[in-house]
Image 1 (tube, rainbow, N blue to C red):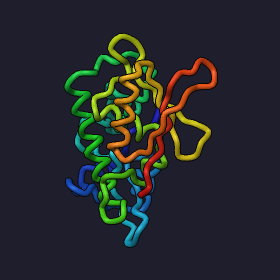
Image 2 (image 1 turned 30 degrees about the vertical axis):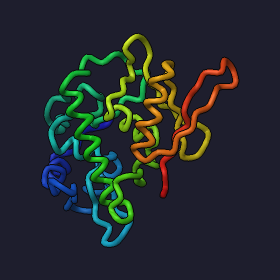
Image 3 (image 1 turned 90 degrees about the vertical axis):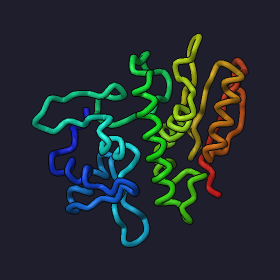
Image 4 (image 1 turned 180 degrees about the vertical axis):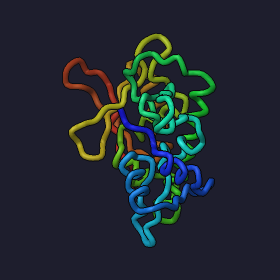
Length: 213
């Protein structure tokens, strides 16, 4: 289990700019937040640090990351204290109501802000470097934020999985209409999508890659 941020790290998170997520702290504090996936270092000078979508979640208090001396209260979405989009195949969650929808909406808004801060020209219509480094999580967040259900209404819903291909994830959805809806969502979120059939059984699935231009 990932340890929660220390009290000093939490103060750095809480003091982040409420709009851009820009952070100020010691090099060791910022490096630790990067390692935890709560911050990233901007590739262009002056190489400031900013909150990732997960970092925005912690700052807003929705995940309620505990202080190290307090009880380890796990959020509904994950036991690590960090938001995680549902990739499909998880156990049926009891938090699929308004609270979860608020979490997902906030994480998606944080991701759009991350695109604005890191893509050339502030382009929010295509994936950023963070998404290319976290393909499965990024694609799953785009799907969940658009209202797709990994649990499905009458059985399994979507599943987002890694593939041997570089910068590509596979999206499985047993319902053909829902699969096409997933394709439309990912395309609208800046992903290149193509439909394929599995060699055995002919089951349709999607290959999705972040669009670069």
